[in-house]
Image (cartoon, rainbow, N blue to C red; front, side, top):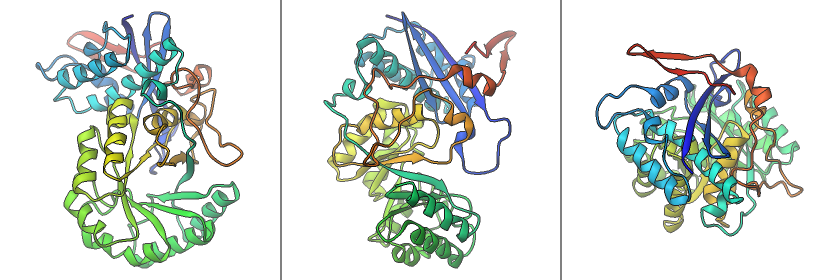
Length: 391
């Protein structure tokens, strides 16, 4: 069969808040081939990603992503890798192409899984999908009291681990950050796994990050996530050497597998966190999962949006028994909650599983999503390059 259409949809909440919450808008991908439809999600700003899909040619290595996908054969797993490689080559200088490819590639896996009546993890070569332990992923409160309440809520809801990130952390004094860490630890209780996400707040300031080490150690934090931007490998390595037993986590900013390999090889991270919606899709994420296993680094998914994205993020390491942690977004906006008919819920033991249904096992709730659809038209060189498709 051949890919007949590639559609992207710009979805958004009516109002966007100035907070670190990626569930406020979405770039949804629909792929059609024969009698089958596949769905994916780009973890990106929707409008520039749509522009990358349809932009006019600039030169031989800066072509619209759509041109490398339409009309291509999609009959087996090898075709997905071939099409992804073609996008990378033809849109080499189009930096937003990585985000666009990520959603398209996930949609290809979804479509092929439906055609072959297999869940994606089996197409990746895993005979089974192991249960993962979800950690409640939330933003820090504005005050330590708010952080304490969020931690108590996570514990009351049965989560054995929780991650607090962004917002005020790292932007004030060392003492203020320590108060938030004490509050999070108190709320989770002595046995809860506490994870901290600094959201690249210190960029490459090693000493600013190092000043927080005693408080992180005192709160028995398992990992400190993204203290620096992805490329600050020297700073990652230096901090990793100083903060034991706290480990560093990073990787969500990787938009190809090589960036993730560098964090493992040169950054000293103990946890590599990959967002399928950014790195180029499920295949690229699976290669990182394999690489991490060989080097004794724990693979963890990154996802903070819909359950479609959550399902895609689980597939690359579904069959890895020893890597059990999974990010589980807890403060989703209505758009992200309503994205799919199905949701990945915790079982009686508090664990989650990659859906054991064909493809990604998730059905977009198109009726619910229409109210979030943003009407877009892109014109260039006297022609309409894009108009919002019918959802």
